[in-house]
Length: 261
Image (cartoon, rainbow, N blue to C red; front, top):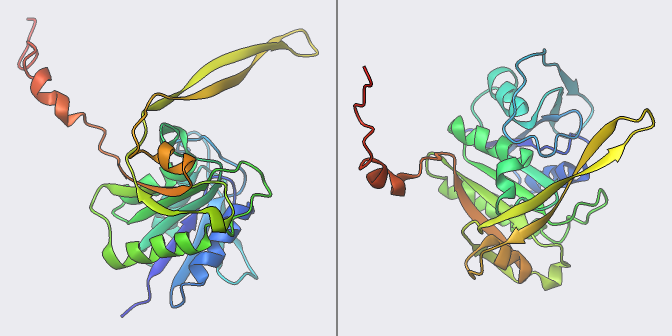
């Protein structure tokens, strides 16, 4: 039997400490083939953006313990070009991260980390996005290592349903304060945003996005509750965005077969 092939990517860039930590965790699993294809520069909050109006470049990074390529595009570009041009076969698993900063709740929509995982899922590859609730470049990823390894190994063993990927978030806590893993739903929350207006040296107005995270969800089964109470949250995410529960109601509207001619 072939060894499992694992693709590692991220959105913070191929040199970010988070992806370096994830590479070491995956290597510690043992008998696996590891490929790294990630953006050559930070691509946070790129969502599911792809490059269509310019060319892409990839560069092999030689001399490391695993096979690595940097990509000039987005996190999703990195997964697409890895599958199409770099990998010897379809990977058994794609892991994205470890992101510097939380991707819980509504942040999954904006996250390049999770979009890379979702793209892998679209390709039929089991995928997991990992994030740590610490935006610091020097964040300590050691505390969550054994949990990340456990989640990866369970996913390799059990697989994931078609159309589902995992969104894993780790609270910023020392290892001894982490209480374990909770399977959660995504909390209903949003960013209360505004654009701060400033003036540049040439007298032109420019705008800086600011905002506060607002959690409207008081449930104890959510990712936000888990993180706030010392647990690692695992949310199964589906990329079919159809609101199936609303379809029966929508079918009562006078729309089906409507022709104004």
